[in-house]
Length: 392
Image (cartoon, rainbow, N blue to C red; front, side):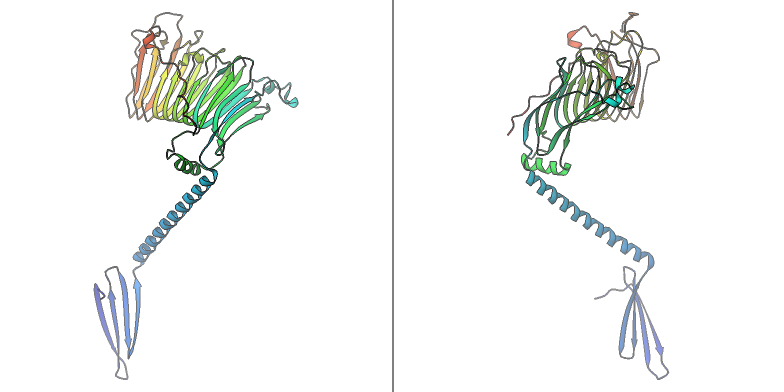
């Protein structure tokens, strides 16, 4: 049975004495039906209002797009599951690789140029695993030991000769050979834990050799101690995981600038004074960020330290054995700025001097002063990663 909201009926008299009837009705959704009866014939037509027609077409299009997205998503998951089934469970295999640093072996064309005198650069990129990076014996090359899932990742080395931008570059990269969704499906198929890290590597960087170092560690756990190295430049990117970077002993030479960037996770920086940097540029966001300023800072000039942190707490530990300049500042946007306490800091005119510029957004800055010669108040040194789980 049809329900009409409105009905109009019009009767027309023909010259031959017959009648033509036209009925117009509109149903609750706004569709107009026109029914005409001419003699014994009956004709019905319908018409919808313009804006309602657009609305109906929009709803149909949205439903169609939603169905299409569901179909594509299901198809993608089935494809990823199929590829993961073909590759099998991530299976770590042992590795022990010695990688020569592209140093004195510069390209003949580059010899005599300004770039040929620049120290070699080492770039290390690691992801999805537990990693340890520290100084190795002097007079050796870079050593990479441990294990990684060879059916989902590859460990590669690349060598780039010196050019106008700098010295020769050695790149060590652990990179995936399959799609991220495929790796996630493989983890679910294996032990049901997608957070389990299939890669565990230790990288030893030779001490006593001047190097420019770039580190990029992501999605995992890292313990990095660069103490004792001879670095001319240092850039570090840490993201998505639990990372600890420290300097267990002073660097062999003073750094002009140290840059550290953190993103998403728990990041701790320990004994930054041992980096012996004249300028430090540190930034992080989304997570807890802990910075310890212990160590042997340069004493011949003021060291500038700039820290910016967003969305999380910044914890800063400053030993009383260093002086903080009066123009140092701590600010916060939508958060709490910490107070720089100078009441118990040293008055020794030969003590190292720091100029601090601290900025926090959507978080709090907690500043703690401590006495560095008390063992119970020393900042914790960078520990080694947890022992690897047995390979099944």
